[in-house]
Length: 179
Image (cartoon, rainbow, N blue to C red; front, side, top):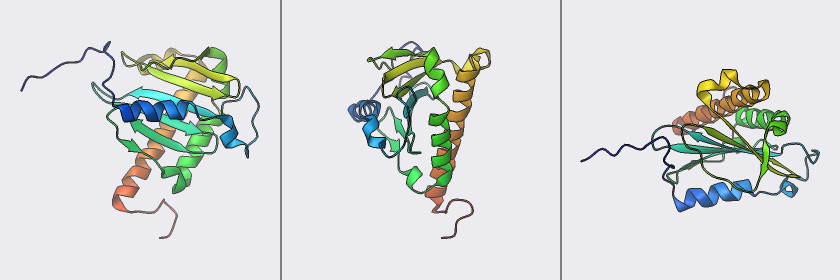
């Protein structure tokens, strides 16, 4: 069997399910969160495309209500953790609430390409539109404090999701909870 190497500049292979799910997440309107007060320029949702290897990419989707889901380019997903794990809700909400300062460094967009060359694409959703910026994790320490903060916070969400996933696999409750 021949090994096919993918250039870092090639787009990631994706399934129609992934594209549809990602597109739906990018277009969830702010009215869905009408029970939460936030200003027109404040971020209410964030979609971060995260390359995770040669052929695997995830889109992490977080909203102001604490919802956090992962969608993978191969069609797999990890959803629903925020309904069971307070740690996921706290991490996701913390990310979204603290992402607003980054909006000033992002450009308004209506195009949602997928990343190449290991870059992370960050889409910030506001009542005034969607704003995009990107980040290279290899040089994150040279980025603005706003980008570094958002990077750190989405690593926290990723960690909370991973712990939740492991607990789900072992059928364990969240730490401190009794089953």
